[in-house]
Length: 212
Image (cartoon, rainbow, N blue to C red; front, side, top):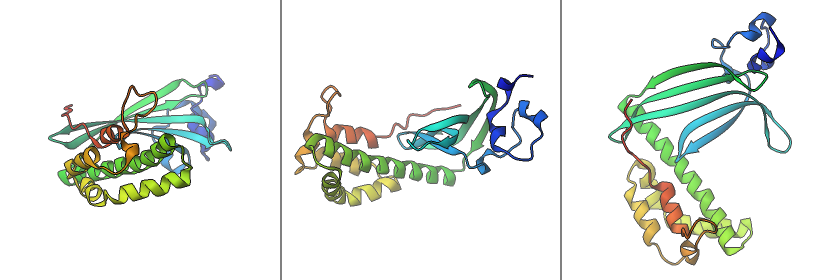
């Protein structure tokens, strides 16, 4: 056995015998190790989490330990199954072990999952709105934040309903609201996409059935 076959997860664990360092750590709970998580979302849906050993002073994640990949299956807008694929990395950066698990959702669980997804989308929309105002108008972050908050306050009812599952009101409002010239400004390097069109695309969820 050579050093580059050791699973990195064991570097963050105590009371493990050295001979286990070469065995896939399937039976250990890595969520209690204090690893740093880097999450990747797709329209508010958590698709991937990379677990790292630490984050350096510059904010860069270091020492990739394992990766989780989530695939959601849905019918009639509701998720009924989640496939979770996990890759564990060896000390030479290669994948040394793989595991797949499944979670099945009741209708109630699926509704809660959808609500959480829409909350994530709204959080992203708020951040994107302020960032786009700053970029388009050349304002400071503080100035853009104040303008963005005024704009978002006008969408309070539509945002609340959106989170609850009534999505069309917010989509219509984003495409028809007036009084904010920056909404119709083109975003640089997007081929002519306007701010309101971009925000609309953020909240327009693809509910195409995915059966598996």
